[in-house]
Amino acid sequence: MFIWDFTANLIMDTIVDWIYGQMIGFLGNFFAEMGNMGVELFEMSWVQSIVQFFSQLAWALFGVSIVVAAFDCGIEYSSGRGNIKQTALNIIKGFMACSLFTTVPVRLYALSVSLQGSLTAGLTGYGTSIGDVATEIVAELSAVESLSDLTTGSFMGFGAITSPIMYLFCIILMAYAVIKVFFANLKRGGILLIQIAVGSLYMFSIPRGYIDGFVQWMKQVIGLCLTAFLQATILVAGLMVFKDHALLGLGLMLSAGEVPRIAGSFGLDTTTRANIMSAVYTAQAAVNTTQTVVKAVTK
Image 1 (tube, rainbow, N blue to C red):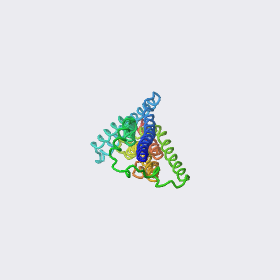
Image 2 (spheres, rainbow, N blue to C red):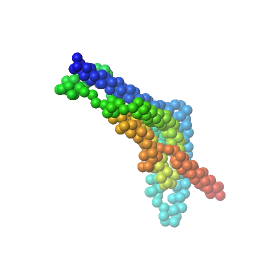
Image 3 (tube, rainbow, N blue to C red):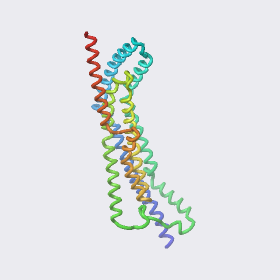
Image 4 (cartoon, rainbow, N blue to C red):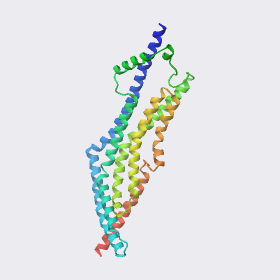
């Protein structure tokens, strides 16, 4: 009877671990589905119309920029400083940017969401059947050599049950980390749409050789996709570690909320504030330059 108690304890621990993994796997899959909702946003007809509008705006700005770049090259060439090769390369860069800025961010975001869903499923074992659990139990029982191997250690990552307040504190921190990542995933598709809309305004600068703003825009898109992948993955990893090492798991879960800040310190800022201001200045420069060219042509 004594041996049966320990055996039943091992079986129940394995089943509880499987149930816990399925619950955390469901949470990771839920975040992946939220990310897919952001991808599906770009399949809606009205969103495609908005993207198409900004794509046409980008091509219009690109056409005006080619004319301005030709004028600039002609003026510099008359003074012996013109570089036709560099101007042609800048125009090619602008053409590629206009062709890809509405499709590559969406594809990259879809890839990051897909990788996040696959990785979290692998971490948690989400989708494994009860038959796989039974096979694992049989394998663990076959590996037992003594009764000491059947003893269990800690409870939910703690060496001993200390105080209910400690568990309540951990639950509050877990809820805070999950809710923070939840709201971050909820608005990510809209942020990507804003970034695509703002990216169209940079097409006036690229053929003229001013690509710093567009490079920063690309960094923001990469930062958004990187954050979408890392936040949910680190959160799920923290939840999986929590059942064995509670404080370490809490640290991982809370660090998931710091991914955007850390990415921003390396130039992968996911906010749209600085990007919009830079794009506004670019649009103002485009309008002013176009007015100058029109006045020069009419005269």
